[in-house]
Length: 284
Image 1: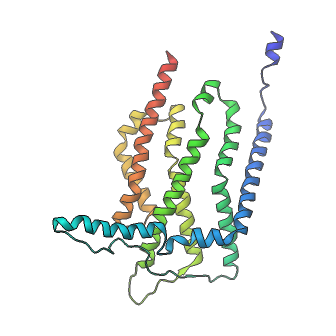
Image 2 (image 1 turned 180 degrees about the horizontal axis):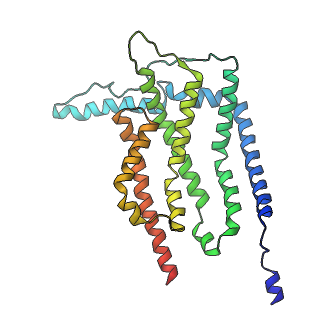
Image 3 (image 1 turned 120 degrees about the vertical axis):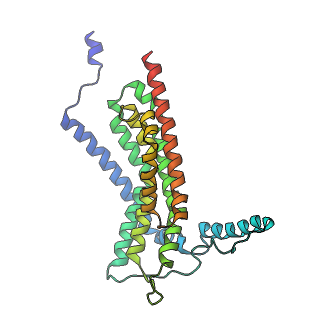
């Protein structure tokens, strides 16, 4: 009996937990810094091929939108309807960026390198977070949480790509083309462009984590599938407001962004229902 008791892990004190957490944070910060340094070194790829690419007419999304206008015109032609083939073309005019601060370009270089480091290191950051939380879970909870790193990372990266390939080009097109008067020209400041780009990409990645949050909230009993169904109408309004915040204020862009968010919400209901079913089976 004594041997069995001694084989049990000793309960850690609060300071011990802090020490363990400190090393998880240190390893995460090191991973971010290493990837940030790599991003800093390869600035041509980071800026010219990635960050500034959505404002170029040859960017994938811009070309697809332009092609979609031609396809739609061909589709409507046989029924006597037609639209301007260039109606959906976006970002067809050059957008020049200006820097007005002495250290603006250097500061931007550092900030974006850090952002790239955080995004690229996200799988490892979540892995370290999982390693810190895992000892506090029962074996049953660990078993049910298999694949958490994969799904969390996949959703975050999907949100980042969604923001990059859809929301960012639409945002650039709307705001660079919007004028209150022909007497006022749009000359975009570098810091303004970078700020909009960063907020859109990061917010999209975070929003796409909705199913993961619902999963954990369902596990601890904070939300249920019935709760999510009951407040579906309220959630739709909130999601539309969120899509309006991260997109240009036009209906077309809000629908394009709001639709995936609604799909994620419906998926969250399915996930919550599955968690409840598993709890019911375990209690039998």
